[in-house]
Length: 388
Image (tube, rainbow, N blue to C red; front, side):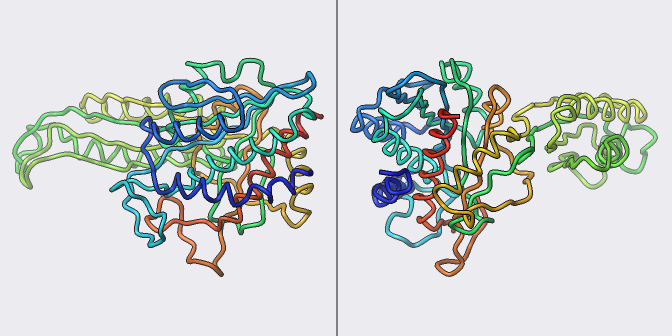
């Protein structure tokens, strides 16, 4: 049977699995029941696996012929969101919901495993099935790489995300930058408190912090090429206790996003330089704590072309779409940084069936037809990569 036919064969099973995962969501690094269910499904398929960390699962399908190795990855953690959907398989865990589609990703990869298992003797190489925890914390990919043998012998990787901005029945596998880096910073300012009526006797951290907020924007507007998308956002500014007391301490937190690895490599140093120098101008002490969370996700140009051919094989020319890159982030980037990779956006929106809500919304939902397409693309790409 063809990959397309096998995907149709397993569609109902994938939907049932997705609904089970949706009904039993678990937060990052706590995906114990999710991990257990994945292992049960792999046991049914006689696919060997190992546990990485406490919840990560790495399955292996060795083909009937020698060849390269491809890694297929899905994430499986949920979010701290109280679900407001009203279908029968809504979350039974209070305050936890699959509001981003990772339930679908897990079921799609199991579906791809079912397809590839049936074609095992025809596979010229090895397929690794990576069920990754903690994507929402940008920790799971790095953890699995560092703690396990996930990338040992791997020649390429493929991942995907159901996407609410793409209609069901279409898939994007565009080359180049696809998702941004995502970092977090904390800026702590120490000055000298005093009476609001006598500012000359104090070192005002509110004024200093305000200057820092504005000056950080000049990194984007005056130090980075205007052809390079970059965002520097201060999300919180905490200072002061009373209207007539000059704040002696302040704390700012924020995030940065970019698509260029060269910019990502130095943005922390630029932020620290600007913040510290502004602090000196105000005679305040400034400390910057910068957390590099995930680099940009960049699709290999040649493999993106191969992935497009895979999509056409199972979905036709009309199944291929191209969307603009997004400033959202994905820790799949750690796999893509290590081996040539492709990350796909799998359309899951259908306004004829439901109101399309953005990812992380309490009423987020998908057209489950995307399960069949997603599994088919995963499996077809694996075969095409190994036969390349």
